[in-house]
Image (cartoon, rainbow, N blue to C red; front, side, top):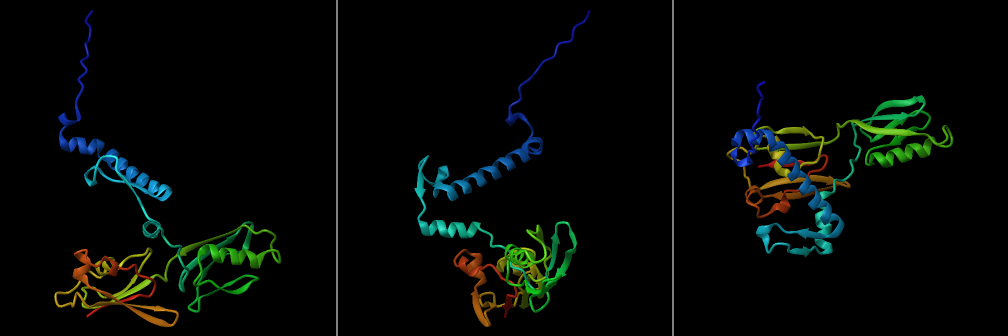
Length: 240
């Protein structure tokens, strides 16, 4: 009777062809890097202690962040809640009450019409704030302890405008917050004759117009990164 012998060879990662190794283990390495980054952010938020990489100092070195630094770090990480605006489509549903469940569009004056309640101002409020106000108006007059769900079904109010010497000027609809550089990228960049260091951002706030200067070369060279502000609804970027 013949016997079969199996030989098992241990292959080191360095012996695996680079392309095959990247294909096989690349997603694992990428996932590990993402997890490591997330853990570092969590440690900073919980303890205020930042672990330095090996090349930044002696191994195991740590430094304490001041309250001011922590505040700035938290602002960078935090995402402000979405503010409802005119044109947004809201899906409002009341559990076990189809008559009061419907899609509504926020009118140009910022109001919505809802059964039994009538008109109510929605623009300028977060989803949580409007949900609470609706519940307070419904209960206890119409429904005792209503289970109400509210979500933004369609975002139509997040508009910015880029005009002047860009390759694709116009109005842009957003579904997330972006900064000035990202907006210029959406406009396909500056034209050769644009005054790149005299770009202005105009913003209306409480019936007043504020203006921000944006010097393209300074920002892209890392000199004035604070000018690369996050844009808000209705901002107008003018590239002379």
